[in-house]
Amino acid sequence: MSYGQGGPQSQWDPWKPNSQQQPWNAGADDGTPDWAALAEASETRNKRRKLLFIAGGALATVAIGTAVAMAVVSAGGGDAEAGPGNLPASASLPASGSATPSFAPTSAPPPLDPKDFISSAKKDTAPLGPGTLFPGTQLTMGGTVYKKGPTADTGSCATAAGGTLPKALTANGCTRLIRATYTKGDIAVTVGVAVFDTADRATQAKAQTDDRSIVRSLFGKGVKPFCDGAFCRSTRNAFGRYAYFTVAGFTSGKDVTKKDTKVFDVGNDLAQFTVNQIYRRGQVQASAATDR
Image (cartoon, rainbow, N blue to C red):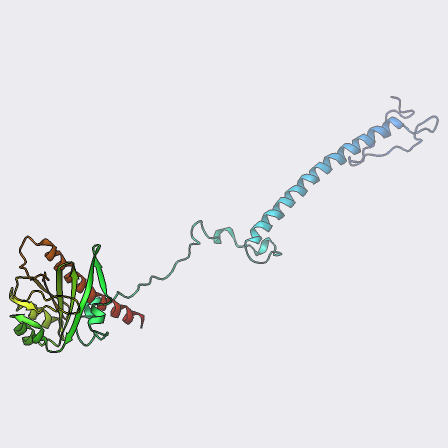
């Protein structure tokens, strides 16, 4: 291309320092602008603008992403409008798993022992009588139902005992003897509970008994006399301030032999029921004392 008189001139580039724009009519014979040069300059400017626009868009995207991240962190607590300067330093953030709350160790008081309440008359103050030891009209032990017959309660323990038992009861200060009779078919059993002031007295009384220490059978109210001259099976034991005894036999008056296992079962069931009732007295009183 000819640039007219004066030889070639340097092209004007708006993005290059010290470049100069040619006057519209510089060196032109007919005063017409150099359209080719102007078009080339315009294209160069457009390319540069495009590059700047792309770069600017990338910067804008990073800025938006950072704002979202800060918003997510800020949303975890504190002022949602607070800037990044209000966030804690990374070194002060809690480590994973360290946010588990801790509590001071505590311990519940040990449960009260029910036996403590049935070992002394001073603590064993719950109502006591045939209705509390032998409630209802029948009882069930191991699937076997026993009907309750007559009951009795006396402060003269020796009068409700036979053989060598009256001496043991009297010597150790028996204060009451509560009895109840249960039946199963032609078998009857009387349970007697002797009450003492302390567990030591009850234990001593039981230790002073022998095979001839018998609680007297209780009959009436539909229960025929039993164990009144016939051989019967008896048991004796103590728990807390109570000594308990059983005597079991046939209402027909026949003697009990070692082969009569059903009589043994009846006596064992009623002895177990009685000690369960005594222990339950302790449980109820221990629970009441704990709640106070």
